[in-house]
Length: 398
Image (cartoon, rainbow, N blue to C red):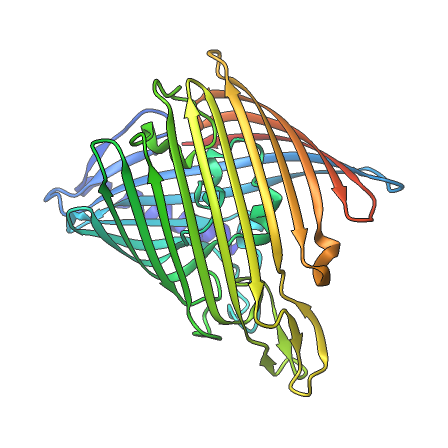
């Protein structure tokens, strides 16, 4: 009920102010409406999107599982304030999975509504400063919007190694080595415990650096961060990137994600330095796309211990993973895509090691804004029963 009242209140606030604004509508998929201040000191694009997912899984010697859910349900506002150089983005999630992960200790028992809330100031040429909560510059697949994925959902690599969102500052810059060759750099400093934390800094700070090389120039429509090659690049396009993350005195099992490592009867937190390396790339040409990602994580002390040296049972998820993904979009906007993911966890977390083979079929009705996606996967687990997973999803993005 509170969720519905919150959304209703936001919409009423927006609509009651329309009489004093200039309203511009756009085509489907580019926001419900745009609001521009009379004095042009601010703008707002208002958009809604949701994903409806049905899936079924089969595990050896176990009954079939079938489920339907609203996978994602988002409200997104973006524009500028005071000057076009000062941009903002606000995104809230209202599905159960969007809001899950709250705790009495660290989010005051509240659902985690807020996904993104940040300002970006393009204050000097190719240099911009970003402040607030949003995605960290980690692996490429995670930085991609969930609205622009090639398959129904992200890979196992992303699920185990991604560093998702956090609150802090980012400095972004790019320059040209030649007329086409572009180099992008990002440096991030954040709190290190993930999004919507209300109890202040629990461990140390989290530092992330990323560099990207685009030797053949820019992709159309930011295609280096979308899955399928829907624009059918007329010339080959390639982007290769690497990120390094250091989380000083991390208190969660997956850097700034996963379980909090509580010790001494939950009165304190176990802390360990965590390092993660990502290497990724994407290639597109005439409807064909190929993406690869590699991730590696290690920790100074991966086994959480109480002050007396006894193990708590919590283990930092260390190891490495490889993800290979490819697809081809036909002129009819049907796409066939495939993916292979390998999780190779350290011996202390070996039970999470697995291989996943996925074959997908998608129909892009209005690009990424209205699409139907399906895939089927075979999951080979490490010494445990293997699985088959089938999924069907509809995406609608106003």
